[in-house]
Image (cartoon, rainbow, N blue to C red; front, side, top):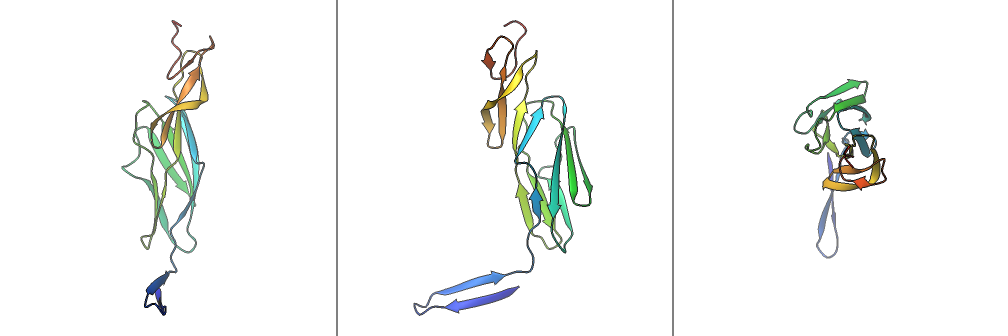
Length: 149
């Protein structure tokens, strides 16, 4: 690491740090659309020229999920069983301790009984949106279309 110190006439010292190590770069969709109780598949690409890296999920993999890697291409497979879960935080670390976080917005579709999801949803936490359901009778509900409507 090279440190350059510049002194101004006002006796203000500023230090600029130049480094030859940058954190890994994570490329993926900013929105993960997840259908409740169905497999969802997402692709992530991690690059860090000239350095080795790893990709993990903070707090460990969610239940019913797998993260596979092949040459910097990661496949995240997930079967969400319930609407409540911890936000997904992907963490890429390189061999010199540079770190990148990637937090996608997870849109959850939990519609049942012939309902289809609509994009105007209910925010359930900072990184999760529970989508509303458009029911066959024209009503829009927050979770599912009851067969008794």
